[in-house]
Image 1 (cartoon, rainbow, N blue to C red):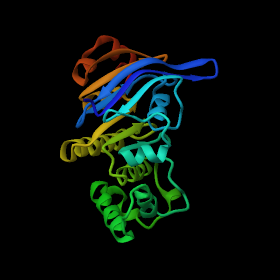
Image 2: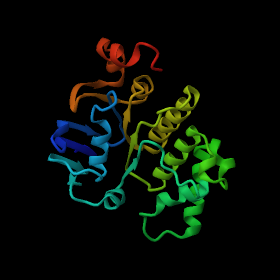
Image 3: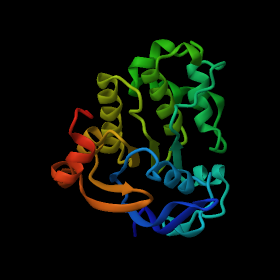
Image 4: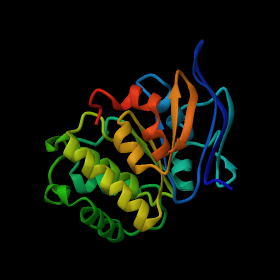
Length: 242
């Protein structure tokens, strides 16, 4: 049984079908990416999995149980953490406080334990350690993305849903972020479902990928197969998208 399975998912905004009957899966321990240009329906798919958008039809199954109709915080409690696009960090809180917020859905933790786990996140993302007591608004985009990732990980998820983690970041920072995700997958066995426009990094990281165009999945394959695919190269890799 797949860890996460999407069956025939359809999502409408008014008259517009943003997602049109898509099916895909993520196995435990896998990194799977969903590629597509802006407006393809990728973010909508993520928001539907995490309970922020209600679908018009289809199924979202996590460990064989339907997630449809559950509140977003209940979905997090089941083990599905969503790191949204735009790295929404609370500007008036310190970096450490922002990260600690990620544990808010876990019951029975002492504040001491939460603080210790937050310290562990600074091991994972050493670039933000020195900003532990700094307020969120003082950080760069790349640092904010690391904070957002750390906060997602504090929920101790079984699967991490990442929405465009590379958006607007310098190439070196993108590499650091993807290295951190790879490391988590390899050392902790964390499953990751990654929505990305940066096909080069996403496909090098992912075990498998799906390509989405206008709400429909048009291609799928291993990361290597899609990296080598001429259509994928033409659409997402030529012209210096790395």
